[in-house]
Image (cartoon, rainbow, N blue to C red; front, top):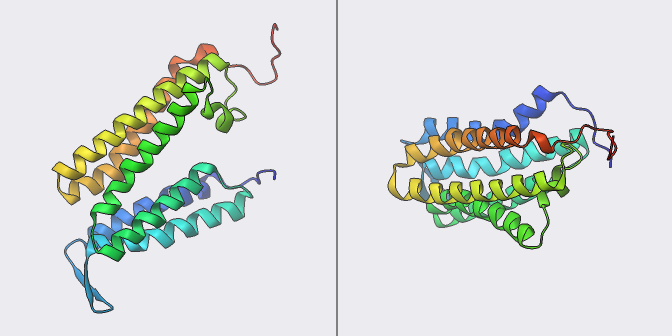
Length: 203
């Protein structure tokens, strides 16, 4: 199905809105205790529970507007629903914090498996958006696999050794910003492998 044109600002709001709303909800609820169905839940648990339907609604809206849903969004939605559900069911914030480790670890593993097979799954997903020689894709894939692995380890260190406040701030802002800067830096260093769209080999 061909992707529909959508306002880029609206798309950014739908993509970035859920984690920002989780952050705001947590800041507002963190010192509160809520009794639901006879069980007491801390503000973090309630914010995590609210994050699940907000994220699903955002993905559904993007699907409706663009006519497509990425594999990354599917994996993210599954992880959020699964670990968000465990968080609320067991009334334990550990599950939600571990989600980030598992998501980053899963991405690192998937990219790593592709590299062992001599393939770049990034090329398969992003090839149409960013034409690049195969050697460039392999280099970018190996570097991103390493980057995701580092973030997975970093998340484990943060949530196990720091306060929940610190984890929420780092998870919402530091990790995504670090990933974007790292990705941008890698793409800049791989410019020589970029292939101008429409250019034929040997031209």
